[in-house]
Image (tube, rainbow, N blue to C red; front, top):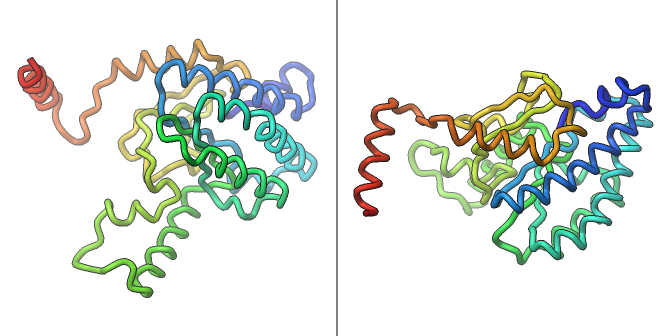
Length: 239
């Protein structure tokens, strides 16, 4: 969700006003995602590198996150959306960490729709943490080491364990880089880079992005001819 600061700068406003408008847009996008039948929505809200920003801006972001959680708790319960987090959330301010855990616990029984917040998240950190968890499981005997390590096994130790890999990754504001986001999970994702800053990336643009995604062919290493043949066989078997 990139471009809050630039959105504000272009309007002669403080950067924090851009972040505030960005949070407002999150609420709209979450609602629209539900209408479109998107079961899993992951939002990169605060990266592990964002601590390098000015302290006043970081404090403002943490305050906005806390306000968002307090406000959205009722909406998540009403819409039956389960909240997840990925990243080293234990390093967030204590009040934010406790509130996150409360909202996650309050929504943990929902199974159909999921909102994942990436907070203090970095894909490289995630891999290191997963290696440590996997190693600890081997040492404790809870994970049996038999032959070569398979991705299906290792992925269970990532922060996203139990969450499907993203089908499409959207980055706003015109930047065309991944910025340490879900590097492992997005190996076969479709990418869409929008020139629009996050506060202006409204529900209509989300819908347009999904329409573009549907027109793409996902081959997963296969040829286009193979994909067409599989579609044909699938159609025949279902008819």
